[in-house]
Image (cartoon, rainbow, N blue to C red; front, side, top):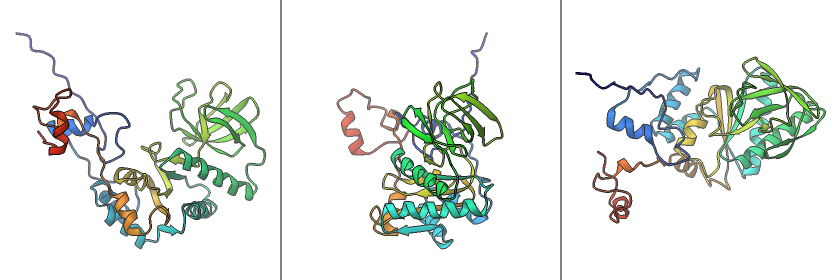
Amino acid sequence: MRLPPIWACRKRTDPAQLQAIEAGAAFRATAERHGSVEITEIRRQREVWQRDATRQLATGRTGEALATYVDAGMVTESATRESAREALIERWDRARIADPGAAQMILTHTRAECEELNGLARDRLKFHGHLATDITVKTTHGERLFAAEDRIMFLRNERELGVKNGTLGTIEQLDHARMAVRFDDGRSIAFDHKNYTDLTHGYAATIHKSQGVTVDRTHVLATPGLDRHGAYVAMSRHRDGGELHYGRDDFADRAKLERALSRDRPKDMALDYDGATRFGDPRHAGARAAGRTRS
């Protein structure tokens, strides 16, 4: 008698991090029903107290983690979001000057905020005499000014160039047709930027884009869209230090900041509901009101 083949599926992920943009929470549902192996050792952060704070963020104890960073002087409150941006850029610039070889990343929730922060970072570099000659480059998001020494982010996978969505580098040479970039891993490429246009500045990135990234220092601007999942990702990308900034026009006090960053907004699966309930069944509408029934 011939037995059917046995298939094994191995997947590594973290359901406490950012939730799927589209439907479903397949990994969480699979782990709940069939079990999983959990990795509990944290290696990214060098300081023990920061590893402990990352563990607190991962397990929903956001308030405890936030208090730890407050005690360490790494949470900065400003009167407004605008002044919080300015304070963040000031701290970013000081860290850049103190340790030019350290990898830094500014993180926030929306692309619009990234545009603002990228612009402020470039203004600060120009003040110090960097980014001397801007050249206009047409990108998928409109025209952008780039210069030699600019940080740059690639936004689309392209095998021929050896880049992925989120790849970071520094522009070494630039003219109206071509761009030479040195990646953070040491590789270099040169390409026609009229053929590859999925580019943006690489000083600030959305928290979604930063998943999987490791840098020496992060500077996070908290805005109302953040929740527990975003806070966990944003405050765990660093090796040496992660700083959090916010404005009182977004969060009137630290208690409101803590409540926002503690919100748990997991995605649901159809399997989360009673087996008798099916999509298309008129009784389905009442299933949510009655609460989810785990299998």
